[in-house]
Length: 550
Image 1 (cartoon, one colour):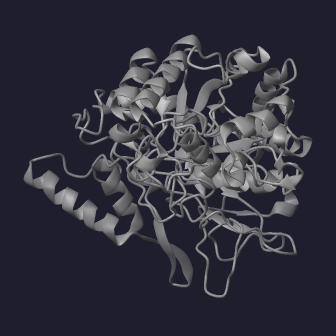
Image 2 (cartoon, one colour; image 1 turned 180 degrees about the horizontal axis):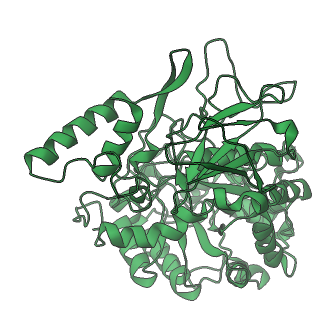
């Protein structure tokens, strides 16, 4: 069974986003590179085909069927919806069609900006004159919340109008949504909470979340909130339920000395009350980005997650939530890319891009522009726009989103090198927007590619690295690493590479006759169903994109 037959069969059977099926390796056929699909996937296809025939279902559409093969990519089926509740999960009441409508803007958006801002921002990675970490600094130096606040609060001084700068930077970078830390593990809220005075409104008379939401909406950006279910400040939070889950030793010792008992039910009530405030006072909230669960500290036992999710949905019916109310940290690169939709709408690999994406599952890689999530004055390793563009393209062509983090300083301003890198990505997106927004992954070609609802295919051609050390991949690239190769930047799968002298050959799919270089809007000559692209004949770009159409 060849690749095109497998792909057509998968699509005709209504597999969820199976056009994003992973390539397991690159093989050679008649001296040319070819794709070898995952054997388990092929077995599933054959089994599903026999089930359809046994049930009298519709057989696979023959070649040349009137149904376009990419339609299923944009409206994937989701077997089993609606889903019933159980003791650890809330029900999913929507149908597959309703889910597709709710998720569409997020799937189309592709690129979001993450903002880590809190008391740790003022400490700038330093504790009493010594390096101590960033957003985890309280845990790293193992101090109680009173000691931590006495050091950090006087340094936290967001300047007026800074959320306008955040929102404008997101627009300049080409992001379509933003996610801000409403409360990180330190427990300090950036919003006005009636549940505590450990928040920005009580301490500095600023409601940062309200300012942020208004700034984003003025610019047409979707509004997301990160909210930590871990809390190093609230005395009732019971870290002993999962001792492996991070908790400052100094805080535990302070509570013990003061004979303050843990009452996790009281903390859960506090958590739910704060989420209700966020869901009502700042509505509509488009994304709730929970963080995070481990071991027994998850779901019903950890956070009364079913009730929490039901409440969030009742107050914001369109809200999209990640899966970190359940035991998924995002850091385990070997964790299977599966998702029980009762745990959330999408999964969140952290600091890596899955080698083959997660076919049939909505996912979003979160990464940093520099090395740290929170601001750290020692953090000077800022990614170039070219590297970020490669990461974005890798996510797009593997079926996921990229949520890219910036880390404001004490006054809320984003470090200029970080901001400049974001704007550099935006300049590239202005020229290549239609290849990114509103597209889905397309793996029928030898090169990384996406497809839009009209059937236009976009081929991404990223040049090889300049002389010098190669940029380490996040976790695999569209080109499998061969023996003897330590690292490779994401490159076309064509073994000839992408050299100005030789160029790179792109074979057009059947029925496609036109090729245009985006940005230049220059038509490329097509001969025998192929184009030969030579970078030196066109304007230079971190990633050239060729649009193929019929």
